[in-house]
Amino acid sequence: TAAHIEAVEAARELNAYVAETPDLALEMADAADAMIKAGDQKGMTGIPVGVKDLFCTKGVHSCSASHILDGFEPRYESTVTQQMWDDGAVMLGKLNMDEFAMGSSNETSYYGPVKNPWRAEGYGHDLVPGGSSGGSVAAVAADIAIAATGTDTGGSIRQPASFTSLVGLKPTYGRCSRWGIIAFASSLDQAGPITKTVRDAAIMLESMAGHDAKDSTSVPSAVPNYEAALTGDIRGLKVGIPKEYRVEGMPEEIEKLWQQGMAWLKDAGAEIVDISLPHTKYALPTYYIVAPAEASSNLARYDGVKYGLRVDGENLADMYSNTRAEGFGDEVKRRILIGTYVLSAGYYDAYYLKAQKVRSLIARDFRDAHEQVDVILTPTAPSAAFALGEKTSDPLSMYLNDVFTVPASLAGLPGISVPAGLNSEGLPLGLQLLGRPFDEETLLRVAEVLE
Ligand code: GLN
View 1 (tube, rainbow, N blue to C red):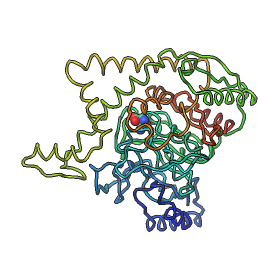
View 2 (view 1 turned 180 degrees about the vertical axis):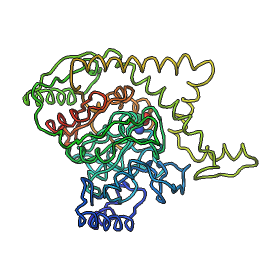
View 3 (view 1 turned 90 degrees about the vertical axis):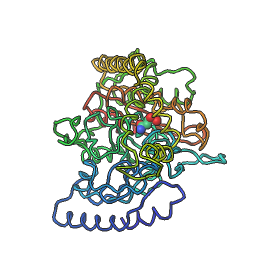
View 4 (view 1 turned 120 degrees about the vertical axis):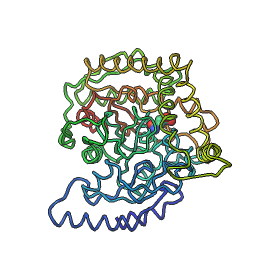
C-alpha cells in the first residue's frame, strides 16, 4: 500500500485519480494486516484498489466527475465497495471518469481528461484511455492500483479495458448491487472489476457480487467460487460468431484480431459456430434512446437543494436552472435533452416505447443464440485508443465506438474484454466474450484461455 501511495503521487500527470486517500489507505492496510494475522485472509485482503468516482464512499469525495456534485461526501458506503472493504481490500482513492459515466473517452469529466498510459511510437499526442471508466483503466495499466472498480452501462468497463490491455468484466445485470452507485441508466448500470488478469477478475467479482436487500434488482442467488471455474479446459464448448458484427467499414486489424481469437479458441478445443443476431443494427439507436431517457429521470434530483453545487437565483426556479446550467457539462445536457424529448407526450410512443420493444427483440436474439452456443466472441471496440480531442466535436462518431458493447448491455448479459495483442502501431486491442445470464463462470473460463 505504501508503495502504491507513492506511485499514485508520482503519476499525477495521468489525471487518473480525482481524490487520493493515503491516510485511509494506510489504516485499511493495517486492518488487512490484522485480518491476515488472525488467519482471516480473503482473496482481496490487503489489495490496494482504486474506486470509480460514482461509487459512494463514506466521507470521501463521490462526485461522478460532475461539477453539480461538488463537495459531496456521502454518509453511506455503496454495497459493492463495502463488500470489498469487508474482505480486507484497501482504497487508494477515487478515480476519474466521464461525467455521470456518459462518454467513451473520459473527456467529459469535470476534472479534465485522463491520459492513456499507452502511447504509440510516432504519436505526437496523447491518447484517450477509453471511457467512461477511463481513470480506472489508466490507474491499473500504470500500476497505480492493482485493480479498480468500474461500471458499465453500454460498454464503460469493456471498451476502456480493451484500450489499455486489461481485463474488464461487466457482470450480468443483477449480479452486483447498484445500491450506493450514482445512477446513470438504472436498467443498464452494472458494476464490475477492471484487472490485469482474468484470475484477478474472478477473485474481485466474487467480492463485489451478491444479493442485496437494498437493490430490488439484485438477484437472490449464491455467489459461486469464480476462481474455481478457471480450469483451462474449454474442449467441446461452442463459441458463436455473430455475422451482424461484421459491420461496414470495420478496420482490417479488427477483423484480423477476431479471426485470431477464433483460431486460439479452436486450438484449445472449442467449436466455432456461425450465428445470427438479427436485430444488432438497432442496438445503438435503441441504447441512445433508453439510456438518455433513464438519465434524464435520474438526474432530475440534482436541483441545488439536496446535494453539491448551488448557484443562487432571484427565486427558487431561478436557483434550479442556474444550478443545472452551471453544474452539468455539455454531454450531460445533451443526454437530458434527448431523454426528456423521447419521454415527452406525443413522442413517447414513437421513440421510448418503440425502443423498449426493440430492446426485447435484441434480448430474444441472444436467448436464441445461447441455445446453440455457450459464449459469443466479438471484437470489443471498432478501433484501438484514439487521440485526445479526436472525436469530441462529433458526438455521433463517439457513440459509434459503443457498437459492439451496447447490445449485451440492453440484454443484461455478462461480457468480458480480454487483451488480445497489439496493432501495427503498438496499441492494445481487446476481444469480447458474451455469456448466458449469470454464467460468468464459463465466460471467465474461456477468457482465461484467450488471455
Ligand atoms: N459510451 C456509452 C455512453 O456514453 C456507455 C457509457 C457507460 O457504459 N457508462 O453512454
